[in-house]
Length: 121
Image (cartoon, rainbow, N blue to C red; front, top):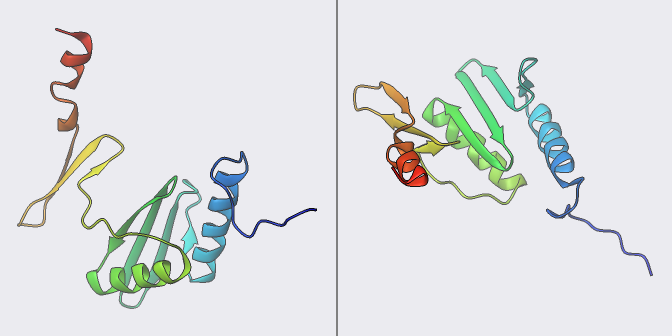
């Protein structure tokens, strides 16, 4: 007997490609444009503002006006199983802090003390 899988499996070599291909097609069908410089960055420019989606494996960073973000997250959740982790705090080893005045600081503070502990200094 032969069975056809209806879902991609994480363990397969093709899974990351299939996931990125499916996500890219979905985003492009919902008016997002893929960046020429980085294929993991998508933007949607509309009359109410700009939304940017950055993808790293199966994590998204979604940037834009709050009401636009709500709609994009709702649309993505209707198509994909996902969980909203709230505001960005850490990404790829970087700490992100948003100040009350609107400034955003990005640092590698996460690594303070880590290098010394690995080197046993």
